[in-house]
Image (cartoon, rainbow, N blue to C red; front, side, top):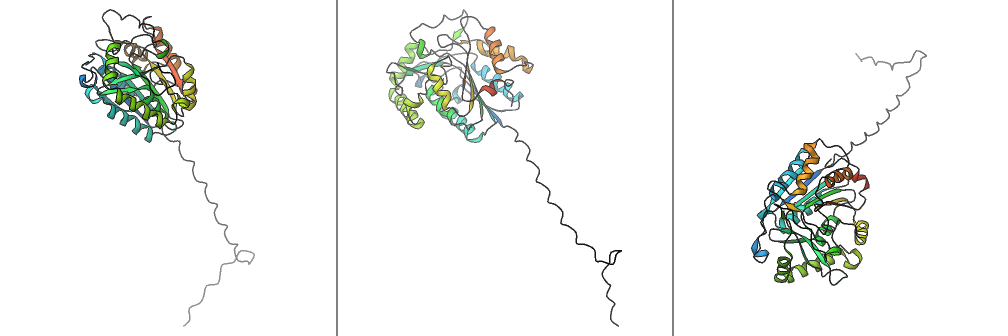
Amino acid sequence: MAKKRTPPRRSPAGKAPAARKPAKAKKPAKPLPKKPIAASLHLGLNSVDPAAYSGWSGPLAACEFDAGDMAGIAASQGMTPAVLLTGDATRAKALAAIRAAARRLEAGDLFFLSYSGHGGQIDDVSGEENDKLDETWCLYDGQLIDDELYLELSRFAKGVRVLVLSDSCHSGTVTRARPPAPAEVGRRPKLMPPDIAKQVYADHKDFYDRLQRSVAKASGSAASLDPDAALAQVAVSGRLGRLAAKCKAAVILVSGCQDNQSSMDGDRNGAYTERLLEVWNGGAYRGNYAKFYAEIKAGMPPSQTPNLFQLGPAAAFARQQPFSV
C-alpha cells in the first residue's frame, strides 16, 4: 500500500508560508587595542678592560648598583629588563640588545635604556668641523660613540617611545675649552681623564676612525644628518634641532650633568641616580617627565645639574607619567 504524502503546510489564508529572510551577518568585533610592549636595557660598569683603554681600568663603585636599581624600576612597571654589568657590558652585547629592541618594538611600545659608567671623548672625523670631539660611553671593551647611539635610535619605528638615562660625564664640544666643574669632596667623577682619553684614541685611532666613517655611511650623509651628540650633547644646540627632525621615534634623553660638569660616583649610587630614586620614591611619584626632571634637578648640587633633551615627536611622551608602559 502506497504511503500518503503529507501536503505542505499552509498559512491560515491558505497560502504557503513566505521564505525566511537570511539573517544579517554580524559585523566583526573591533580588535582590542594592542597592549604596549615594554623592554629595557641597563648598563653598569664599575671598571673597564685595561687592554682596551691603554692600561687604565677606571675603577668606580656604584655603577652596578645604579643599573640594578634602574632594572628594578623597569620590572616594577611591567617592563622586561636586561642587565649588562662591567665585563658583560661589551660593545657587541650592548649594540645587539638595542638592535633587537628596535626590530621588535612597534608604535606605542616603550624602550628604556640606562647607562652608568665613565664618559669619554674621541676626535671626530665624520663631521664638518676638524676640531670637533665626539662623546662616548666607556663600555668594557671599547667606547660607544654618540654617533653610533643616534644611528641606533634612528632605527626605532615611528611611534616607539624611547627613554635614555645616562649617569656619566660628557664634556660637550661647545664648551670643551672650559675646565670641568671641581669634583665634590668624597666623590669620584665618572669621567675618563682627558690625558687617558687622548692616549686611548691614539692607540686605537684606526678602529675609532673607521667606526665613525662606517656610521656616517650607514646614516646616509654625515653632512646632512650631522649626528653629533644624541647621547651626551643634551644641552641646547642648533645641531640637535636637525637631529630631532631625523628621528622617527619619540625620544627623551636625560644626562646626569651639563656638558661642562662631572657626574659623581658614590658608594651605593651615583649622585644623579640617587636623587632620581629619591624623587621616584618607590613608585609613589606622580607627575610627568618634565616635572620629574625639574624635581631631580632642584635637589642636585650646583656642581652637577642634570640635563634634558627631546628628539623626534616627543611632546606627548613628555607629558606621561615617568616609566609608564
